[in-house]
Amino acid sequence: MNKSADNPRHNFDADPTLEELIAQQGKGPVTDVRVLHGYFWPEEERIEDFLAALHEWRGHKTVHPAA
Image (cartoon, rainbow, N blue to C red; front, top):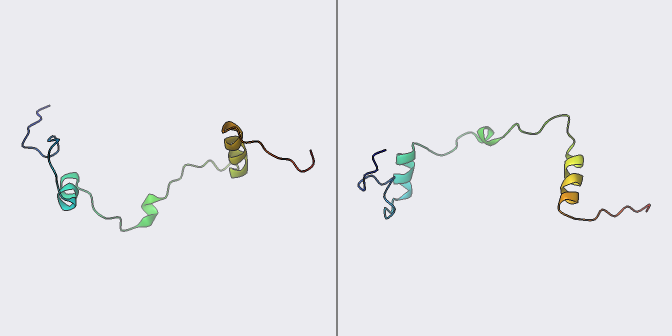
């Protein structure tokens, strides 16, 4: 890979503006927030079960009023 010091992507001392970064990366503002929504949660897994496991993994004690 040819990393030229003139290329701002490979120049540690470069101080590009926000507009320059956007142009270099070919990105722009999000115009549709639905693209940020992920479909990662399995339907068969209840969120309550996950939260209970997370509390257990973190060492939190669950207080049961009947206990």
